[in-house]
Image (tube, rainbow over all chains, first blue to last red; front, top):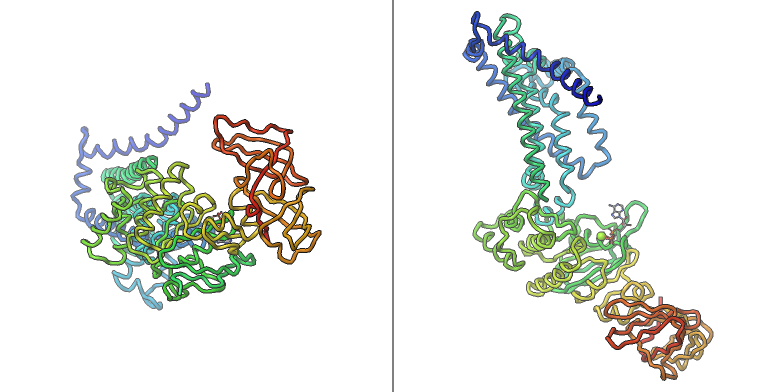
Length: 260
Length: 353
Ligand SMILES: Nc1ncnc2c1ncn2[C@@H]1O[C@H](COP(=O)(O)OP(=O)(O)OP(=O)(O)O)[C@@H](O)[C@H]1O
Ligand SMILES: [Mg+2]
């Protein structure tokens, strides 16, 4: 009887998630009347604006990942090594982006960095891109920080640091040659999540008026019928691909660790 | 001038003074062990030499050079940790090469040195292995090679063998000693295992509550403990309370049995109590022994320990243990039996605190 309910709940949950997906996928294939076809996908992929915005967002995602890694890995390492008492507070700060809406953050940015401010980042395209990257990094911070922090927990950073120091290594060498390689798997899973967030993000890109993939999806959704469905299916596939890669990578890590 | 000198070294963590006035001069090429119970500050002294802790007072010099303002990575010191601390992302050869790479040595030199080091620890065949693919003993040998590769001035080892099982511990400590002598490197070895310290050191520092209680050659530490603490910590020692009978003639009494010591009693007066130390292996049973260097008592227990039989007997208020070598024909004393233990006058040491 218990089993029955467990299975029931599982099937209900699966239906809840999968039915809309199936419906959407089905719809996206029906652009040509009467038969299934990939026409909607062809239209989307052939649209130059799709190519532009998608490329832009991928580049932004990569920049965000690099910036996030450079920011988070040394911070999490330093906090664990020298300021363990501060860990709860740092963790709280990194969780803030989950409760503060993106729109609040971006309005704050615009107020602080507008053309008449002391640092007019929004005055140039490069400046705005940098600002958008900061915003993305903030949104990704909770995931990035947590995964890196968890990664750091699995190695004895204090002793490894001292071993490296006694061999003459300075902080940069320690971070680049010892710490980063040993938390690479954690960094990668944080990176995939960042990637998924940046690709789908709408609010910040729209308000900063950058040609990102999120606003493009929105635009398409407002004006077309079949293409948005195709786009949604594709971005789902992309996100799930990222999650699958995280799974793969962390399984790989477990394999390496269980061998010790 | 000694090679490595520690002068009134002190360290406090908050209000707790962990190292108090630690003094030590170590000669070039010497193998020194810090021996002491848990929490006595051995690791703290070692970490101050390495630069991981800043002394609250005192000075450290290596080869005449003050280490005061040098960060750990600026000191020329090799360190081996209890937990091996090999870099998990690097294989054996890369681990050993790390210090040389950081120092910017040319590749040919690094390769040659790594090869030499792996030969020294006899692990040439495992150069491509990763740390998790090796046993603890192998990992610790790699850690030793890694520490030695950049030719440090001083090698520090903090309980490098305590995570290993007994057999490996003995063979590896001999290997460490042999490598140390071969390279002639000045070494400080921290341990709480007295046998380890006695077997491989040139000199031992017995530490007690943040101070060096006694510094000396292994045999001196064992045979001539300077304090009650050293006597109790190194080896199994009988501590016997005795009454001074005639200080001029070195005569004392244990229970009601008179004994003459070889050592002068200093300025003790008749009737004073003095502490004497007697090693369990010093005496032997001799039924007909009489006179000044024998004690008679009743056996309270007798335990078979493998190579020896340890018997405890009661003399006056003191319990005295003594060991007999096991042999097939030996009949161990039985509980309640009266036995006489004979020793030489020099075996009874006067402990002055
Ligand atoms: N960072 C620290 N902060 C506060 N107290 C410390 C710190 N490091 C060591 N201590 C204290 O200093 C004392 C000496 O520690 P130390 O590690 O030097 O002992 P040890 O002789 O190496 O002992 P063991 O044999 O257990 O390793 C201990 O009481 C310990 O609690
Ligand atoms: Mg210690």
